[in-house]
Image (tube, rainbow, N blue to C red; front, side):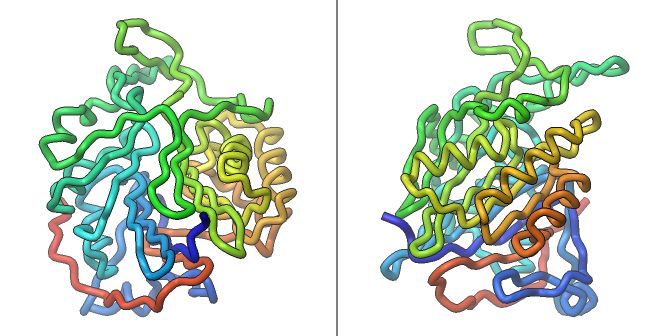
Length: 329
């Protein structure tokens, strides 16, 4: 059964643009707020965190999808936007990279009550990046099961999809089904639980799919490690709905060396869904944003830190802007 509507607040993202105006579906934290001494500035960093609220028959399901690079940024932005993290019903981690999990301990502590944490078991495997001039031997060193549990997280380590609420599903493991999306940065390695050292295919990567009544499926893909088109196809089949309302998140097309072939094909295939929303964020890169803006100008949207998007039947917004007391070192 689909949900009636969804409201998504971006608590962490790479960019801020106080000159972007709000629209009929996206409310932005703009110049009037940034320059108002009663509130303060929304912060940005190289990370992602979504506060997702789905509404159905008078009930709300609240999920925090990813936890940003650092907890102070997420907590600061949540405070400014009047969000009480104690309302979170579940935390979902898309994969075990620090720009998506770095803030999870501080966020769990701020939630203040036991909460399920849905994550693929492979997210905890040690990961390294090897480049010609440097090796990063364990980029996810801050993510481990014991710390998550001590902070109040009840781990649900799942390889398959999980329903979090009406119309709201995690993807579980996915396959890359389009050849042009096989192109990826090199030098990524993973040490598995059995001690095997292998190239890191990031099999733990998962997305959220939201089936919205009368609108279609909205896919949130934080980092595109399976390819945004492949993950969209996966969720369309999982939710048995051919209509794609839109896609948003990091599409992993911003890395140096990603070809124009992949960028052009990504933009073209997304446009072929005739969606109402395409919002490349985080690791998508300027070239992909430009390509989407050219082939699907009416669907293209910039979702910066502090942005709030609503789709479908959603109750009026009652949150009030606050002054943050979170210390940013």
